[in-house]
Structure formats: structure tokens, C-alpha cells
Amino acid sequence: MGNARARRIPAQLVEDEDYQLRHERVAGIDIAKAKGDVCTRLPPQRDGGRRASRVEDVPARAREILDLAVRLIADGVELVVMESTSDYWRIWFYLLESAGLNVHLVNSAHARQLAGRPKTDKLDAQWIARLAEMGLLRPSFVPPPEIRALRDLTRTRLQLVRDRTREWQRPEKLLEGALVKLSSVVSSLARTKTARDILEAIAAGERDPKALAALAAAHVKGGRAAIEEALEGMMPGGHHQMLIRVHLDHITFLDRSVSAVEDEIRAALDAIPAAWGIGADGVPSPDPGPGAAVLAAAARLAEIPGVSPGLATAIIAETGLDMTRFPTAAHLASWAGLAPVARQSGPRSRKPKKGQGDHYLKGYCTQAANGAARTGTFLGERLRRLSKRLGGNRAKCAVARSILVIIWHLLASPEARFTDLGPDWHARSGDRDRKIRAHLRQLQALGLDVTITPTAA
Image (cartoon, rainbow, N blue to C red):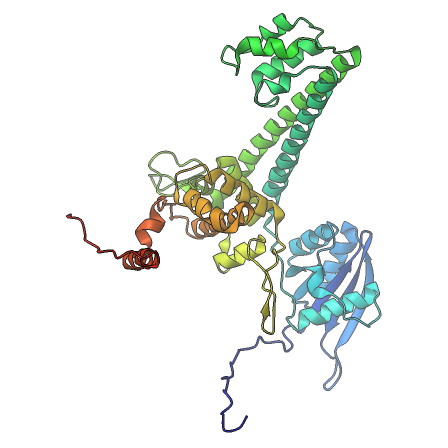
């Protein structure tokens, strides 16, 4: 080094978390489909003794699990921890929680066994219990029962809508085989009444293109003449007629199912007092009416561009209404998988990975971002600006995160209301002098000498 002084890098003091013994009495459960291995960790029975572990097999049946709850309560267990194994954890979590125990559900990856050690269900249960007593496992978010019921309904509705979309795609392929070019002259088979009426007539045995075209609405794209031309030369056979009927009947059934589930969703949301608003008379109500002091939760979220009332309800079903479970908006974004995961080692910083999270909530927020893209609002302008720099998909992810941050604030403060910043917010909020200097440097680089003269107010 010679006389050169080595550059000293100041040390950084980071406060560590307390990983000493946090819980005296804990239970860890390794869950399988038909049973669970339960390890109960208890204090030593004598001074100077060692902590004891009691390991037992418990069948995954309600009576045995409730008997286990009685034993754990008698032992004074403070915390019960289990892995989120498929959906098999639900009977354990729900029954032990209903018995009054403090139950935590943890990510299986966080409780992974150390490499090089034997792996059995009993050893896994002991390992989970030891991690739990040291406070090394973070609990996952499990919503309360009323939100779980709402979540089941909204997710079922989503699956039914997807099934209906797939069912509408099947007749389109079938029609091409029958030389029926209906999909080329209507905007959509699923969303066009004209298409449905014509398919019903074909399934009933009608073959005359002119008679089928007469069923089209007067304002159909291209007019009825275009419909008649698309149907000329069609050759539907008897099996086409039968299969079209099968698909239309299935679609009708799915329409009724979606409608019934939507009615249940509205009833389930109205039954949650935390989702109610407050009317002008100060009385809480699911529908506070005009002049409400506090809007209902779904109505507050529906004010965000791109968020419809149905989408707002689905988002509530995923996040719940108690934002104390997420200390900050960043915690909620991370839980939804809308926060990048840092990947840095030494001097290298690689491109962050996508976060793993609630893919339903992530999809809902991305859907809202797509809806906001077509609006003249701050969110729409933000998406358009980011798309030029980041590309469409990354820009949608960024705007989806912005929408989720807004949702956190609206649910954390029921009195808050969404206020749009306007599409010109970036222009108004920027540093005017900094923009002038940047433009002057660009012009000077082109060899121009520019004099700035402010316009009269």
C-alpha cells in the first residue's frame, strides 16, 4: 500500500431480533392427509433438567383433534405451529383455533429441515416445535371465518367465469368445422345477443342464411347482409346441431350458477359489520345511502379507477378488512407478490425476482391496472409513462402495486376517500427549473444559443 492509507469503511450496527427462548410451551404439527405428528415442547420437570418433547400421532379427524386441543390446553401450550401442507391444514387450524389455542400457519419453505439430518414426520414435528419456541417462524395470514367464507365464494365465481369463457370457445371451433363463419362478423360470440340467437336457431334446425340473418340486431357490425354472407355455404350436420345444443345448455347452466354465487357474495359481504358504511344519520349500514359519512368498504375501493364493485369485493375477500395484520402498505404488496425480491451478492446485483404471493390478489390488482389504462387519470397516465420505459407487463405490475397501496390506505382508514391526482400530476409536480436546465443542455448540445424569456402572466 505504500504510504497510501487504507480507506476505512465504517461498521454498521444492526439490531438483531430476539431469538432466545420465546415460548416455554409450544406444539409443532407435521401434517399429512390422514394424520398429523404432534410434538409438544415443555419446560424441564426439575431444576437443571432439560426440556422435554412429547411426540404423538393424531388422526386427522375432528374428535381426535379436539381431544388433542384439550391436552394442549391442559399443558398450558402458548403457541401451536403447523406447516401449510396443501389444504390438509384447514381441519387442524380451524378446530384448534375454535378451541381457544393460539395457532400459527407457516410457510413450509421457512420450516425446512436442515440438510444432512434424517427426515421423518416425527423429526419434522420436533424441528417445527424447536423453531417455534425460538421465534424463528413467521406466521402466514389466515383471515377470520367471515372473510374465509367470502373468499370461497369469490374464488368459486372466478372459476365459474373461466369455465364459461372456455365453454364459449368450444362452439367457435365447432362452427368452423360446419363452415359457419359467424365469429368473423360479430365482435364476440359470448357478448353478442345476435350470436346467441343465431346459434339457438341453428341448434333448433334452421338452415336458411336469410332467416338466420333476420335474427340479427339492426345495428350489428356490417349489417344483416354481412351475417347472411358469412352463413352462406354452411354445412352443419346432425352432430353439429346436437353439440351446439350441449354447449349452449352448459353455458346457460354456468350463467345461472354465476348469478347465484353473486347473490351469495352480496349477502356474505352485507353480513360483515366491518364492511359497512355509516349513513348521514350516523347509523352503520351495509348501504348507507346518499350523503354517507363513511362509505361501505367495497364502495370506497370502487372509486379507484379500474376497480369495479365486483372486483372490489373480490379484493376484500383476499386482503380482509383488518389492515393491522399488515403493518405497512409495503407488507401487503410483498404478501401479494407485487414486491421484487432482492438478489445481491458482493458487488453484483442481479435482476430482482418476482415475489411469490397471493396470485388471486395479484391478478385482481393487475386486472384493475388494465382497466385504469383506458382512463384519463393519474393511474392511467402512470401506466402509459412506465410502459415506454419498462414495457407493458412490468408497467402493469408497477401500477398494480400502486393500486394495492391505495387499497391499504383506504381499508386502514375507513374515513379516507380516493382522490385522483389527475393525469397532469407529473407535469405539475416536477421541478420546473430542473426541466428548463435539462432542455437548455439538449439545445446547447445541438449547437444552439437559446435565450429564455418568460411569457406575460
